Length: 206
Ligand SMILES: NC(=O)c1ccc[n+]([C@@H]2O[C@H](COP(=O)([O-])OP(=O)(O)OC[C@H]3O[C@@H](n4cnc5c(N)ncnc54)[C@H](OP(=O)(O)O)[C@@H]3O)[C@@H](O)[C@H]2O)c1
Image (tube, rainbow, N blue to C red):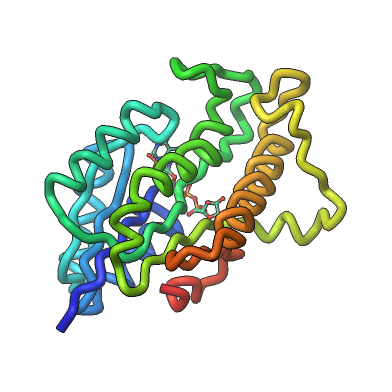
């Protein structure tokens, strides 16, 4: 039976963890979680294996740092030769952090994690996903966007240079990710693009 290989960013907690857990119960799925903290990643893998999960491993990466993202992709490609599903799940929505922080790459941190890293991962895995019979990118969106149907993306403030508040930035980031998903989808390649609002059943999309 053909194995389906899935990457889930931020798979050590919350929704990403639950998605990794459910997918790893399927004997035909191989799951790799990308996490920033080695201990939390190892604990998540241990918990999944103890719960009866079959194939799970991890790669560490700080998704606010684009060199770290590239290193993670290289690690994955040295380990595996296929990828079927990339789930861009990790997100920075720490609204207690009120100060705008700029990363070494020159990106505002939330924008880096929530928009730039999914973009970079999608680009760097395009070759693997295109070679899959069912290549898919799933970008995790937010129900909050439904509450603000007239929200517009401020292209002049993507990096929070004019105005920064973490909650506002988070929804701007989610809107940017949604538009990016639409842009990729319109290209009509053989890679299927989905932007999903989180529900308990979102793993069904895989
Ligand atoms: N929970 C909700 O009500 C809700 C609603 C709508 C949408 N969503 C979306 O669902 C997705 C998952 O959210 P969740 O509720 O499961 O949150 P969560 O438990 O806080 O998970 C977020 C994950 O992202 C990881 N992460 C954050 N910054 C990172 C970085 N710089 N590098 C690598 N990993 C990083 C976190 O790692 P650490 O554990 O190391 O911090 C964590 O694993 C997000 O895209 C979120 O926007 C959630």
